[in-house]
Each structure stands twice: as C-alpha cells, then as structure tokens.
Length: 330
Ligand SMILES: [Zn+2]
Image (tube, rainbow, N blue to C red):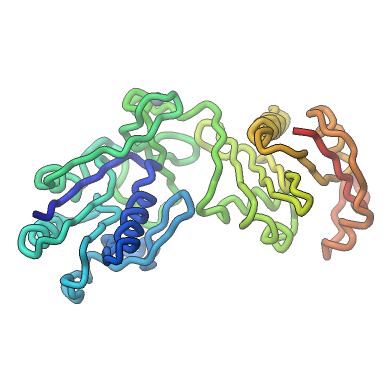
C-alpha cells in the first residue's frame, strides 16, 4: 500500500537536497520519480527545485498534474509543499489511495509568525507518515521556527508569503525566535546564490570578470553579524595545490571592528586539516594587515594590477602596479 509522507523541517534543514536524493535513489533503481512544486505567482517561475547545498533538479508544477500521465511514475515527490492548497493535498491523497503511488512531501511546518501553512495543515492532518528533518539554531538547540529577517531584524508582522521581497529566512529555536535574537556572529559557507554577494565582493575586487573567474569554483564564506553580512571571503585551490584567499571584503559600516581578521583566522583553522599553505595576493596598503595575522611575504606578481584591470586602481592616490603575495603555512 502506497503512503502519503510529510517530511517537515525549518529553513535550511536540507529538505530540497533530501528530495533530490530520494529522486536519485529511484532513478538508480531504474524507476521514475516525478518532482513537483506548487506554482506561486512570479516566484522564480523556473521549473527547477534548488537546494542551498547547490543541488538542483528539474521539476513540474503541482498545477500541471492533470496533464501528466501519472502511471509512468513509481513515486511523486513534492517540494515546498507548505504552499499547497487544501484541494491540492486532497489530490495527492487521491493519487496515493487510488493509483497506489507513494507521495513524499517536503516543506516547512509553520510560517514566520508560527502559524501552520495551509499545505502543512492538511498534510499534518492527512499524511500516513510524518517525519521531522532536524536542523540547529545558532545556539545549538533544535531549530523549529522560521524567522523572517529584514535589515538585520526579526520581523513578526506582515503577509504570510511575500512575493519578490528582499526578506530572508533563518531557522531559530523557539526561544530565540520568540525573543527575535539572531546569532551575534556566525560564519557560513554559501553554496547556492553566490551572486547575491557580488556587490560586496566588488568592493575588494573591482573586476566582475576577475570575480567570475574564481567565484564558481571557489568556496564563499560570509561572516554574519546579527543576521547581516559583515564580511565575505573566497578561498580557491591553486594549481600548486595550495590555497588562496581570493577576496576579503568588509562592508563599509562594519570596518575596523576586527571582522576581517576573524574571518581569515577562521579560514586558516578550517583549511589547516587540508594541508599546504594559504596564499593571498594584495596591494601594499594591506600587507601589514596580513602580516599581523601570520602571513609572510612570498613573491611579487609584477604589473598584475596594470595588466589585469582595464582601469587604474588607485590606492592612497597612486595607481596600483604589482601584486604582493603573502603566504602562511597551515
Ligand atoms: Zn537558539
């Protein structure tokens, strides 16, 4: 007998990554699993589901169910199922009971105000199996709530779904959600949506072309202060198998507070287990900053700035010419 599953978790609990892995497992066994998501007005509109881990997969919309021959599928997977309407959940129930096809739904339990979403309400009521996908709050407790963050503050009023808004969501434990307390400071690696940090990365490297050359393959880290990006850094693997800090930028109002140093120290510790040295290429004005962190002068890339950047980059009124490389053994 097929079953209706509701697997819920807070923001960032890898629900979509789980959904993609389940689909992959079916495919590996020579079976078909249909990936679906509800269509929301304007909301990306793309027929793909994407996870923060960077995994993505093509999908169809729940609204297209009537036009699909479901007998071709061994399983149906629904991502973002919190946005389902009652009649859509009923439709999934009918598929399970009448077509004997298992339906696995992934989504949030409650909205930013702590109220059940419509889809989650009916899945809670009707699913055969309800499972929690766990994640943690910055304090280490289990995160069960989803906070809406705007301008570094947790907001508690507003529409349940904001289309095209610039808010973001963070998973918090119930206590920190109730108090509206975001992590005082935390460092995160960003795998999906790296381009959102482009304005910040451009502050340390004014060339979009240069950034494009290392952002995709590089590891992007962001230091958040009360939920807002204060500093970003990119680490890449060099051809000589060592590591290179490619970009370190601190947002204007957060400069001279030690966030840049904190991020570099964290990365040096993080990459220590991978061996080799960490290199950084910089301009004369930043050499002292890196030396204070334990870097030592390694070599000079002559005319790097004049050859790689179409416009002269001024530092203390003079155009930059050579790039100074420093390194630190990890
Ligand atoms: Zn907490």
